[in-house]
Image 1 (tube, one colour):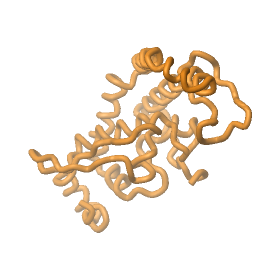
Image 2 (cartoon, helix red, strand yellow):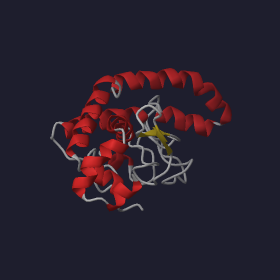
Image 3 (tube, one colour):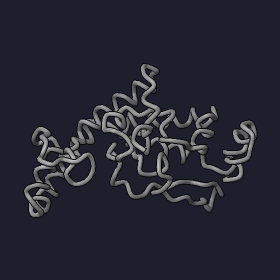
Image 4 (cartoon, helix red, strand yellow):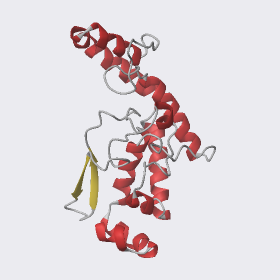
Length: 211
């Protein structure tokens, strides 16, 4: 597959990629990464995923890993940029594999269909916000035991209190501004749906000013 991605003509790539890569499976993998604006992986750094060969189909699939910086929380762009990132040109910098794959009409149709399905069934603001509240109730006590500082950030991020700025705040790291996850879900789901409906293209230059 590496040779096909690097050396094949566009016609040969489009004709043969489906023989090596499970297009349905990869479309789901990519749609999940893009919806979550998970940029600490294939979309930017080229890490945090596993490739495997399915023993039944003989085709290549992908498994995500290490998603602690998903939900639009990676340094490659601002929170607003990642909430509005393009779904059709989602990678930062250069990515020959994704660029060639999303130029294949067959894959593009599968990918857009998987994205729409995830929006309708899984990536629903009310549903995710409820889960955030359920999990927050369970983990609040151990976070409070760590420090008042961490509890303060935690409560801002889950929406219990409004986001406020702390002394000596940094752009990245422990003392960065709190990041309200519920807001991310609302904005991201709305923006992705607008892209699918052709009402906006999304931002396609994520990371250019930050790398």
